[in-house]
Length: 72
Length: 340
Image 1: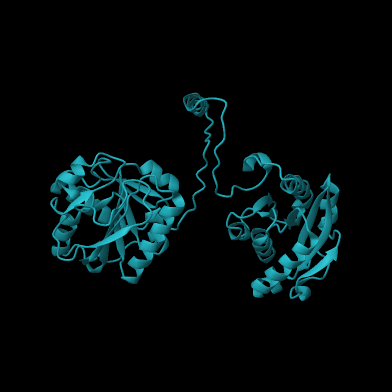
Image 2: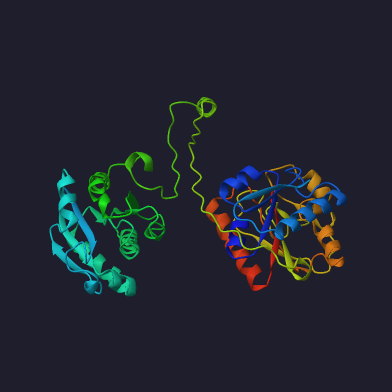
């Protein structure tokens, strides 16, 4: 619900989670599937950079409805 | 005999059309307009009085109108208040909703499900769905009468679908005939047969996605997490489950979330990996590097955190609103939010 309320304020927000189904169900718009529940931003810095880059791309992308991207 | 008070606008009460929309609250003896059809459907109930108010008067003087209507309602000593049907009419639907929500007795309002009045009840009154226009009168009145009698007699109501009202956003525990495993198999078999059902309707609203960030290299980006990430030792005692609020911590000048300084107290997953390197939950190390490289304009000096674990939707929505307000006031233009 945090993502939705922040987007309601007009600020684009990417929600990085490994449970995109739940996020989709509650109506989050920009969802990026992270690798695991215990480490949504990956284990090492290299992996993390890929995930963050994808998230930034998503922030730069106009969408019309709930969109789920894969991190890798 | 269930005593019913009926609320109508100036038009349906027979006081006049738009020229009478400024009429202040008034009371008519017995039933009026569609109230006659409603009365006929109320077996075991009777309409003792009809309250009416001009649509414009209500919209422009809501407080006075409500307080006068509630006085008139109290004087009738009714068991239940029935408002409308307002169909697709926005002003009338709104008045029905506000009055029904404010009434100290059980109340229902009838209107089309997309009438803005539905949201204006804020879950405090029952809404009987109707067609979008007056052509649905004959269909609506018996359904309104049925729910009015149930409410007025104090009978315990079943779920919205059975009783004919719109979901109010509440969930109630009920005793099922079969255990969860059997019901889950039933749902799965139904789904395999092409029928997708659920015991728990989503019922979440949708937010229109805001436009993308036009130039990230000049934008202020904030980090938010519901992964329970806090400074070592959890100085502000963020709960591991069912958090009552959220916290903010300064990260200005920090190159990453060092393991010696941060940890996760989330009680809903194994935090071993996260505590070896908290950047796995809040990627400050990488976003700081990207800030240095000019890919991101600037990182907001504060990060926001809570525990997203067993948090009720209403509480989580409140956290979101509060954090969103702070972000907006700080001029934040983009957010990376992590959840587990």
